Image 1 (cartoon, rainbow, N blue to C red):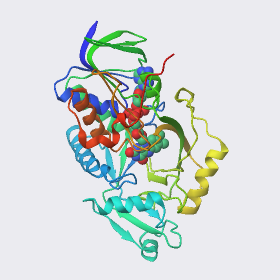
Image 2 (spheres, protein in one colour; image 1 turned 90 degrees about the horizontal axis):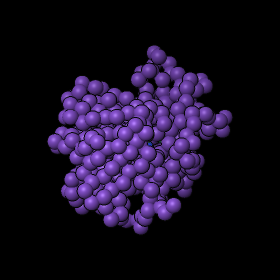
Image 3 (tube, rainbow, N blue to C red; image 1 turned 45 degrees about the vertical axis):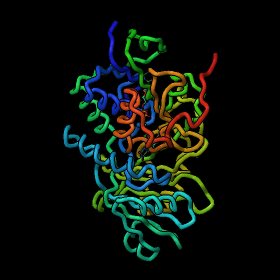
Amino acid sequence: MNSYDVIIIGAGTWGGSTAWHLAERGRRVLAIDAFRPPHEHGSHGGATRLVRQSNSTGPEYVELTRQAFELWDRIAARTGEQVMIETGNVFVGAPGSRWFDNTLANLAASPFEHEVFQTAEARSRFPRLRIGDGELAVWEPRGSVGQVPAALRAMQQLAREAGAEFRFDEPVVDWSADESGVTVRTEQGTYRAEQLVVTAGAFSTTLLGLDLPTSVERQVLANFAVDPGAPRLPSMYFAAPPGDDSAPSYGCPEPDGTFKFSVVGKGDVIEPQDLSQDVTSADLDRVLAVLRDRVPEITGEPLRTTVCMWTEATDGHWLIGRYPDSERVTYAAACNGRGFRYAPVVGQVLADLSEGITRPDLALFESTRFEITPVTA
Ligand SMILES: Cc1cc2nc3c(=O)[nH]c(=O)nc-3n(C[C@H](O)[C@H](O)[C@H](O)COP(=O)(O)OP(=O)(O)OC[C@H]3O[C@@H](n4cnc5c(N)ncnc54)[C@H](O)[C@@H]3O)c2cc1C
């Protein structure tokens, strides 16, 4: 039986990064995935992710963002992959809107370059967007568009160069931990290691067998044609009005010259194995209603759609920690729709935890903030 220092179940965004960090620390790593990342069966489907420096969630994310930008730059320099395209990012919203106010507060307490425009100024600076009465715009020049396939490829490349093995199209069927290590069984084989890291995204509850305080939400992305002669649009967010706590709608230019737009679906809870690429006219109507209003120059129908899923924790923060009462199993779950841009840092944290290095600076994400117990059959 093949034996490793660490086995990673789920070699997607967070798992690929974890494999890279652990392999570079000299660990013998096996990363196993049910599919061949990048793919459209999980949380990283589609070509791009918005990578802004601001956040709407808490000051704890500021330092993580700084580290993530540094690591993405390093990944790009070492692999030659264009993992980020710097488009700048504009966030439009009215004071009193929770997501917008948090964004301003977190930016103000950060080292990140940004400008805040009042309504009239915002309209003249961003004439292609509809900015409502009383709304402001925040501009971040280093806001970028993450290139999902290139980023996943680059992290896999660095991991492989450092000796990590990847096994793709090999679903894990079960795993167990005992006093001397962990055993992972797939449809093709059985593997042993000292440590296990589970980064299975939307499939975490099933794979871990834990009652995680999470739900998996279906999200629809739609791509539209833009005038090829017009300057490239920046990436953008539109906050919901004050009193509406929905996450902002967002869009960004994609590498094929189209523009991606999404209106965050709240409460569209699914079982991860039921994810399908089918979209309904109601899905498209929701996207079109906001897009037509906010970016009036985009008038066509969607050229294509992608359906993706993310996992929300009840308090909106990642769940990172040890399997209850285990010294051998570490996991990260609940990306909350903002796990791509932090992937290089999350992988580093998981590498630390699996090596017994504690991270008191990341208490906000520690899974022990909830009482999480194994699900008994
Ligand atoms: C529509 C949408 C938009 C988003 N927008 C943004 C954004 O703009 N900015 C941002 O930062 N983040 C964004 N996110 C979040 C970001 O994409 C995710 O946080 C990130 O991809 C999470 O990665 P992950 O590693 O948790 O999951 P994944 O990348 O899905 O990886 C999990 C892996 O586990 C594998 N797996 C599952 N079960 C098994 C099994 N039994 N055996 C083996 N392997 C298994 C899967 O195949 C998968 O490859 C968005 C997410 C969605 C869905």
